[in-house]
Image (cartoon, rainbow, N blue to C red; front, side, top):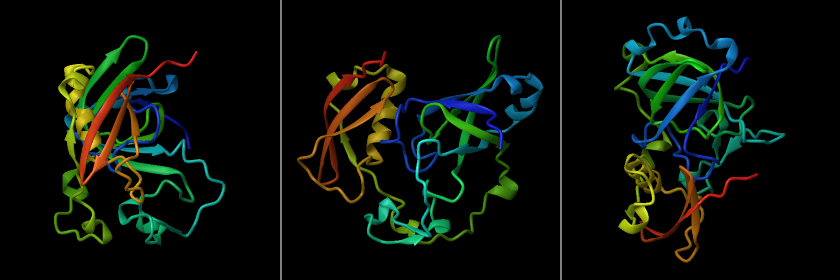
Length: 227
């Protein structure tokens, strides 16, 4: 399979990324095609759709052997489900699937067509294998039932983000960072109110603690770029 593009997001690493696409509306990303695919014709008509599917590579989930069963984090990391009954990154083929909102299509003189999307659950520089339009007629199934995910679909924390710390972020990033924290970035099996966690987002490391489903931001530190 050929990598056709990479997406650029505010997540420099995996920790803190929402577990599904579309959960945090304010998250944006830019899809930049590889030189071979920078022909404007390649996206002709895509702006007629509001949403698109992304097929991508779990590039940071390095594991030599996959398992027939995995432990979904939202089930506390103790219950096993079949790998094909989950969206775990540890699979026979390291392929991810996300539905995102297409915000705009721009033509860049050097980079060719650039797609700006919203709601992406991908790490910065994630390789993209394919892009397809979301078609409501065939892709939307309101009658669909779900399994164990119905037990965990609503899980949000109350976020206390001191105003003086929140102002570190530009205004257009503030809603997104609060949304990311509300999704509870912690490992589901760790519930220590004294533990200090950190999420890297949009150039800053956000330090926080969680007690009784209330997340309180302790500090925001600028991430130092590696030489």
